[in-house]
Length: 350
Image 1 (cartoon, one colour):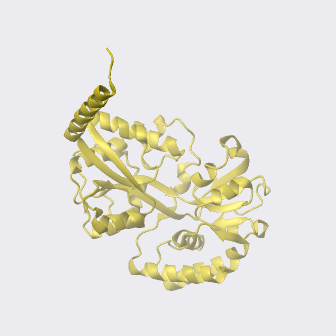
Image 2 (image 1 turned 30 degrees about the vertical axis):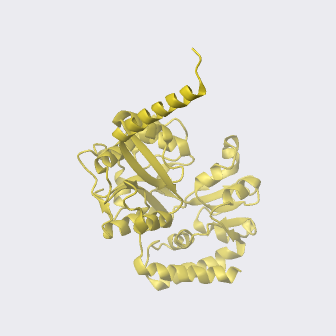
Image 3 (image 1 turned 120 degrees about the vertical axis):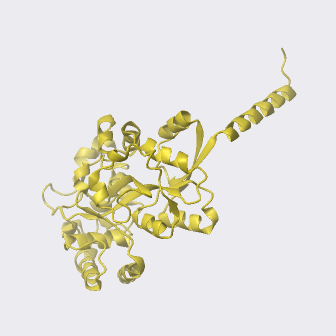
């Protein structure tokens, strides 16, 4: 039978209408999360099992997420994935609702070491850990002799890296490194301790640092311009060909520990599908599902230890090196003191 264009258009319209009706009958879970942070295959499996639709909207910072939520976006989403300091703020401001613990059957899968680091919600009433991570140090082994450098944050005082070293343009990270090296808390509210950390950075580390950079250091490292950089491992490993990892990258987090972050899954107070959101949280923590997330990024298995047996890739670094890391908790108004000190340091470099 000859099919005319009008018939095709009519049929297309009918199919679209039927699809729309079908979609409208399904529950819709609206997730607001970090860019490239939710494995599409895991989302697809969830949609199939729960006969629903998941709409993922992405953000690039906690500040972006928070501003969106407080400025009219609270009813636009069901779930968010904030870092520890913003989870603390959102709990205090009553912006979240409790997770349905009866649906959270994978609760026991969460690493107790992670829960020990949480002061704002250790019982996971409002927030379930998604990923615990930390920045560390990457040394280009092709540029400096093996064993010729100190494996601590004070490596930035080593003159052999002068002009070829960078640290992140992130004051909580850099100041946290200095505080950790001095045996102090990355969340200290003692002005003299913060001052001592700034003095260390300014007098010992800064002379060797070519720039503060939170974005392009991985590419610079891969090109050989940087021999030493502080930052997230994935930014370096992602730029160096995998076959060159072993011969090129020495990534470590010092025994001193250092600042770390914990992104958690939370349900917004005005969520229209809180029950489905609780199911999603539990689904993510099925070990076989969580393993897919870790494999995608080559992340180490730290939050959900049972996922290790399902992983198909080798992580960029062992999870145990994060044991001594400390979360960058919300400092309240004292954060202004950190920022003012950092700005003074940055001005002195210009």
